[in-house]
Image 1 (cartoon, helix red, strand yellow):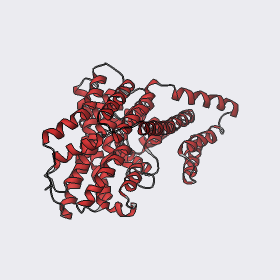
Image 2 (cartoon, helix red, strand yellow; image 1 turned 90 degrees about the horizontal axis):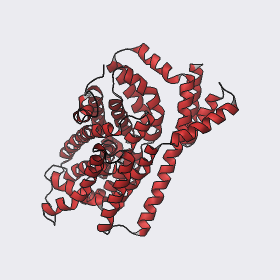
Image 3 (tube, helix red, strand yellow; image 1 turned 135 degrees about the vertical axis):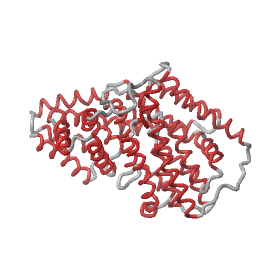
Image 4 (cartoon, helix red, strand yellow; image 1 turned 90 degrees about the vertical axis):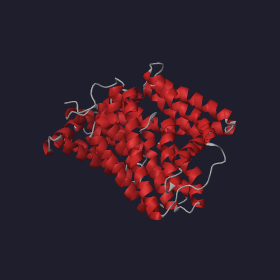
Length: 439
């Protein structure tokens, strides 16, 4: 029965995916088809309705639209431009400084907005014309922007980490956020190092242009934007508000900055709200459909069967984690991050904990892995947004993405096999009991 259910669930899902059916609809239809093999339709209809509502009945889910809105306000409210000026000031003496600026600015923007797609759009639209003026290959510029954007979903605040926390049954958001700092910085450093290496090979020089404003003015302009990080993380760690309430605080703070910078109008604010509602509705529908799939998988015994199958191959944690990561990297090419988190967390989290991996460590590994998937075809969200903003074709960008992708995979395996990298900060802040393997 388990084999039949597994083949039915994932086989029908991928057939629907290849047929162009929306992912959320594909998840729902595949779940219904599989469930009807083992239970009466009327009973399943009742259970499915209950699962949909219970899956959405979570106060923590309110954090997602608020952080999305915060990212939109930063993108359109002049905050991104000020962060870019600061990044350019810090890395101006490095060969290929504009590309290095892109990497650092994406890390800054991610630390404030928590969205890789928003970072790709914001940084690409501002930096692409500047890089073109200095003679940078547009394909190289786009590849750097695309591959550095996933740092935004690791350096807190992070919507995907909140989603993982909810899907995993309440893993500490504060611990995930604190673990995301070194994880995101390591990913950014690996991409940045290869970016500079490629820039040197292509003969790109350091900056020879002096900014009109003195360095102190650039810092003063950027500090209010960076204070959003302290406000959000300080509030969560200090127990002043939850992650959901932190999203509201961030929106209000960023809106205040955008008004003070005179970069926002009623029309642009309305567009931001509309865009936030559309993206939030998509995510909530995915969560509802995935709640049905989680029940069907649990009822059919699929996670337990996959766990037994993996353990039969090897009981060595390093081999099992290698298999997990390779599988997730392949799946990341075909699934967007949100549905992948919802589908694979219930399957792989029990396996990870059984081999001594902390749920916090696993969550950071999972989001890093699926973030890498956002830069790969055929469904990479950062890839398509980055190519669209830079007005280049995927074929031209690919030759530069490949070496940067390899650097990202190196970062992924360091994060996977050295638990101290993602776990030391949560450990030092008292959020977890150990920074190594649990057992």
